[in-house]
Image 1 (cartoon, rainbow, N blue to C red):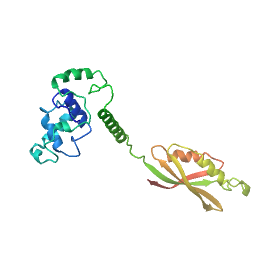
Image 2 (tube, helix red, strand yellow):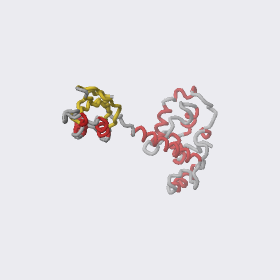
Image 3 (cartoon, one colour):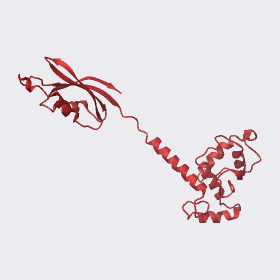
Image 4 (tube, rainbow, N blue to C red):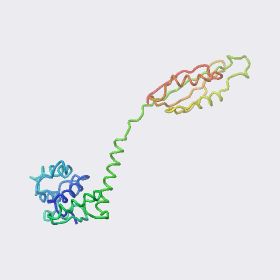
Length: 239
């Protein structure tokens, strides 16, 4: 059905609702739909009451010198554009009474007990817009991370001359990987020859710089005094 009128408060309210999520009456650029609707208004809407309609009006006003060349059918009335359904009165003298009654109906500008298709479309648009804004505002800069290579040196045979007392490297690694910290992710590991048949454990890990202190992590690893002699940072690189 389109806009019923653009003279009464109720009619301008419909325009306000329509351009809340649109830059133009129809399509993605100025057209004869905007020209017809612009000319149907007696003047610019009140900015404090209809900010979106006022913004649209000022924007279309900048095209006044080009009205005749804008695309579309200039013979179409403004009532052919806008919402598909409308229950607004075409009689301006009845509009204030209806608008006053509508204020008690939870924002139902059309005085209807049932949501019209236009109200459902508007609600959907507002929900999508709110979701988009929330997603945009909720974007967080990725946390700074580093990849670290640690050398973990065992006691080897330094605590005893008996080979049976050599450090259990499998148990050492299990204890090491048992350390859990927020922002810590263990990676691949390997045994690297050190000296006199002793091997050190070289392990890769990824840490979030703001959450994990490498010094604290080394202290926790070295807390396994039965297996670990010392630790060293062999390499570190920002991701």
